[in-house]
Image (cartoon, rainbow, N blue to C red):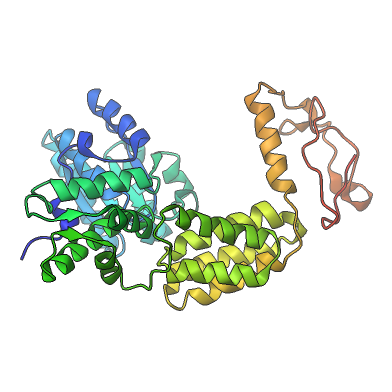
Length: 396
């Protein structure tokens, strides 16, 4: 049997990688200077983290020793470090590649510390969770973190079209891909190239089984095993997402549930839905009800842990909570205004009494109600305008 399409279509060099332009630009600069720092690749599944690590090792002419943190313990890690160091002592470049680094506990991560400190090994690790939360701070301070973004619709389209043209993929077999089918594949893949190629390959064989020369929307629907209810117009996908967000913002629980159902039935990635609920909780509810963000982030974690179809329930709970909560966008407007000032050149010095160890600093808890009148900025600027729902705010 043939290897899976994502395996067959692996790029042969960094130049062939589609997407992650900023990361690839940085890595190609390193290759040109024969510079190879320890790094952590952070991003969602299916965006090329492992692929890029392998291509980088290939272009740097370095041996890549791969280890999966989910299935490796202390012994396997120490053995891998010894092998990497042995290769280096022989005068060759070597890289220790640790996939899913967040599975290592603190002790396992600490094993790497002295080797990174002395430069005995070059580490490339991957994580789908924030490295600043899941990886020990001393390691983070000794590596370069590169963020891999979900692939854009344009990037996914290019990958699908390459698969249809390249003879390593599905090219040369007399089957084409309709625009409707391509649009649906891109939407269902939610930034994940691996998911895109797996669905494309399944759709290809469904079309062949019916003696068809074109993969159409129905083939993709069958391959995706979902009840597609999006309009054939690709823009409808984005309209439904927009309606869902605006229904939560507008405090309409029934519309919120309806548009959520449309997203779920249409095969939308539940992780994408969860992210939109979290953003809405922070942007539109904010400090009017801080629990909205807690509920939304808990739902996002539940989606990761339990998957569909059960994940529809915490998604509905979180979306309803956000829809029914009082609203305030003071945090969103405040940070946007402050960022605009900083980018526009409003760069202030830190007041001397706020410097570490300054004897002139007034400790608020030494005063009634834990408040004392003192300046925290050289030039007073106002960014925070609380809504009527936000209580306990002391404003000068």
